[in-house]
Amino acid sequence: MVLGFPTRYIKHMRPTDLANCIRKMPKAELHIHFEGAFRWSSVRELNPEARSLPDPPPWMRRPFASFDDFRAVFRNFILPATGSEERVERHMFEVLEDLARQKVRYAEPILSVSSHMAQGLSVAQVLGAVRRGIERAERAYPIRCRLILGLVREFPPKEEASRVREALELAGPPGWGLVAGLDLMGDDRLGLDPEFIELYREGKRLGLRLKVHAGELAGPQVVREALEKLDAGHLSHGVGAAEDSGLLRELSARGVWFHTCPTSNVMMGGASGFSDHPIKRLLEAGCNVTLNSDDPVLFGVTISDEFECAA
Image (tube, rainbow, N blue to C red):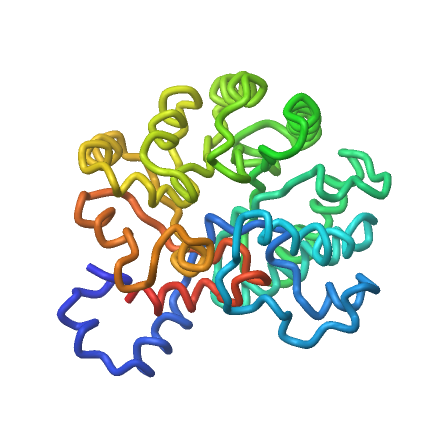
């Protein structure tokens, strides 16, 4: 089965019919970074340094030279376009509006609270603005949103963990409140700091969904480490696990979810091209797989694009 249809039907569908089918079907977006989904038009409006840049942005549709090259886009263009309650609320509303227009009915944006605090906002102010943006979008469109609180490996671990704990206290009871889970993100080659391991233990006790970026830039070992030390049930990317068939069988048996982003993997070097993307090996091993857009403003794709690409 592909996209809910028997594979034999997909093979004989015209590309335009397949694209129309994908655009119309209800979807879930389970791996999208809030900050990586800002509208480029809003970034150009709110970041004075970006106004002179062409539209689309200059990095669009080219592979990034390194993970540092990728992160430089956030530092230089994306994050300077946030930092006030009004901007955070606006961005969240726009992100969900864009998803709703693609027939996304449920979304779990990954929020990096720290990324919005450089100009003096508190955790409470960031979360309040995000909540207002979500409430506006849910009133205007048939979309439901719950947050995944992201921890950035490159930021000071103690500070990151403290801010996420504060956000959890403000968000309401797990299972019913604003937050659905945690995700440790950034360069997965950096390993797991003890602060993050302890926070994941707390998240497990709270019943939070435990996600982790593992197997994006590194291979099977980081995936195994994430399972053993974080007890994660969801891998953001996870495609590096495909190098170890035994690990894939174990992940399939445990029901671990892979939240894959094919275009992101190709542009970040996790796959050499779409034709040999590991997603086919994941599916053949019986793994649970979802398709997602990761960072639309950086990779120039929508979730509908990723479904077409996979099909």
